Image (cartoon, rainbow, N blue to C red; front, side):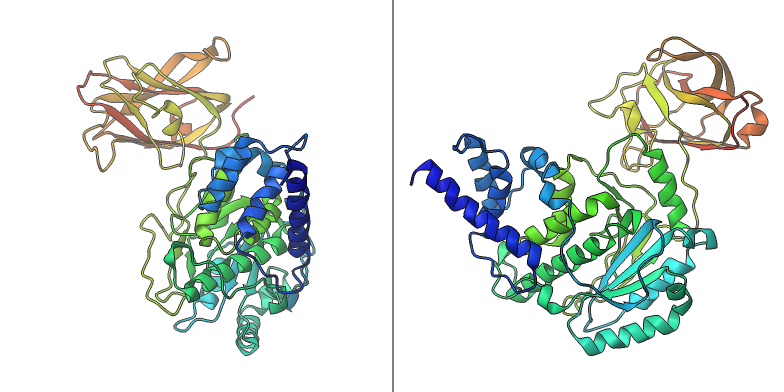
Length: 487
């Protein structure tokens, strides 16, 4: 077949695929060449002069074997304009009405009938009970009842409406449903990973459920967090999320993770939800949702996991929604009681220590589960922090060493704060330092700093006061600020 004939052939199939994705009003049949056609959508956006680049052929081969290569896809995926629009679906409002105003955070839940146990009401209760009155003003909870059993849906709506009537009236809680007619084919799907046919159907439908939920929530708020229907929340989780988001201003991210389990506690920008919804629909029969979320993050050029500890959400269900199987998974980083995430204001970080591999200074000044690692430090070595603006500090906490390397701590060191900054932007440093105390057993913590330091703080440094043969891990540096500093 000539090259131009091939292009016409591929284009006709691409148009058919888009028609299916836009409508979804009838059940669509996905052929065994479905994934090939999907990949050609990416390819045709960039093919010119009627020939197929060898690199594009490689993309097709990789996807056909389920190996999504994020670096190869990223540019085409980010620019795929067809993914920016919403999916044409008519949602049924089972409880609540469209939100009168945009919120800060939407919390999305999708629930189906379980053979054993039902945790949805407890999950909704936890969301509201663990939020303050001020926090409730900034959240919206969207529950999608995704089961095709109408009797079960009606029963759940009655229970939800009775228990959470005031939240529905206040516009904080919406319950929706998507009719079965909008779903693609769920029988006879490919059995990837040798999964049983019923499990393939279960996880494929789950992908579609979440796609429809994401599509609905796309314009409700600035951010969206994905939960399961059997989750317990930590106290004031919204305040913690807001503080983390603020700390990431100016940095690029696609997904922030507040739990290490599955797709619990995954935070997204709302403007990314339409693309994520299309992505889940595009590959709905290929793999489980949590795997697809990892690929989505990579396709949008976030290579590393950005996860925060302690976790804000905990899995509480005992029985899975799949066949009622036991599911005892727990997040051991979860803390239910209120905890205070540090502010860690913007700063430039530097050290004169010999850094090991890629464990650079920036990895200690973060809530992410990473750390700085330097080779055996000598007397006078330091880890320095120069704040972008003068600040008032209320509390400082520094932890060195890890559970695996308990001897890689700062055996002899001190913490100092400084003022009177000098130097260029890259080489700024303070001329005067005040010592706040010594490290004990590798850790340092001090409170009421604003009452002990009379000046606005420009710098902070960890100073090695005695050489050691052990290497040094700075696991975390946490800074809490108080009121606005003096002009």
